[in-house]
Amino acid sequence: MLKGKNILLGITGGIASYKVLDLCSRLNKEGAILKIIMTTSACEFVRPLSFETMGKCRVFTDLFEGSHESVHHIDLPKWADVFLIAPASANTIGKMANGIADNFLLSSYLACDKDVIIAPSMNTNMLNNQATVKNIKTLLEYGVKVIEPEPGLLACNTVGDGRMEEPEKIVSYLDDYFTEKDLMGKKIIISAGPTVEPIDYVRYITNKSSGKMGYNIAREAKKRGAEVVLVSGPVKPMEIDGIKRIEVRTNSEMKDVIERYFDNSDALIMSAAPVDYKVENPSDRKIKKTGNSLKLNLIENDDIIKYFASKKTKQLIIGFAAETDDLIENAKTKLKNKNLDYIVANDLTKWGAGFDVDTNIASIVSKDKVRKLEIMPKEELANEILSLLR
Ligand SMILES: Cc1cc2nc3c(=O)[nH]c(=O)nc-3n(C[C@H](O)[C@H](O)[C@H](O)COP(=O)(O)O)c2cc1C
Image (cartoon, rainbow, N blue to C red; front, top):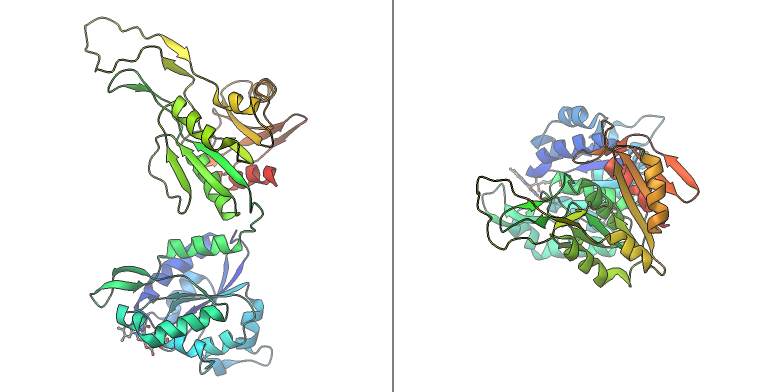
């Protein structure tokens, strides 16, 4: 979402300015275009050259440098899609709240008619000082957005509020800011990961699903304004800030949880890979080795997606088909037999597709159409899938 976005980055004289080198690098990787303004104090902490290098852009420091072609403090805000000030010092926040424009950054702020986002960073006492509290409140009233500082160990060797939010989180904030909230009001159930079926007290059957696809869909859906319930089988920890996640293990647990939310939902996206078979009589004790072979009788599990598709009213039902043979044919059969609206089909034998990788090569199959997509990050595929819900 940050690709091609013009971000005017203001840097003030806070110790956290060194972290902004990482922020510049991350924003560049996301495809954002930067222009940077540094205050004189900021230049005491990190040299403009470092930001020029990491930001791959020009760094402005001198208000009076102007040229006959451009009055920079007027033209830079015009160019920007957003003005981010990180770190925002107590001093700059105070001046912003009081309309003071005695440097390049502050003059640009006053001339800016785009959204302004600040990431304050300072010692806890400075942050809690009545003047700073009042100044931040004033800026909020003026419509400035604030990325709240975090509690933690500060450079002044105290622990408390005032640490600038981590660069990774600032990038997510911006990503979220630029994402159109086109799924606002939609309630979506997303399942992710594998399920497990016990053999005995310690052993189980599962599959290679990593849950990455489902978690990506959940994250993107939330960004686009949807109310998400993520029903997750056991997967490696993955970040999903602010999303309701319910952890399950077996097929029947997954089905039961989905059942709780289904009637009140607008869509079910079954990106989980529930185990197709379960052991007929799992042992509640550990099965001892006997020197002989062990025979397990496997019986078919309930088909979760088929069950919910059979009782859908308003819900859009999207399934996945991960196949090694006859991909599209199998997907079409599955779509019809299970009464689904869409199937996202991916060929497990292709490099860059399937389980535990960050990309996928998928075709979106509906009743009368097959849309073949190029190899793309799972995050991008997540957005393609979510656009089916608009
Ligand atoms: C070592 C050191 C660290 C500082 N760290 C911060 C800080 O994290 N936050 C802050 O608001 N001020 C901090 N200051 C004070 C500011 O640099 C000072 O208020 C300055 O006037 C800010 O100018 P500016 O807002 O124009 O960048 C620090 C000063 C020093 C000497």
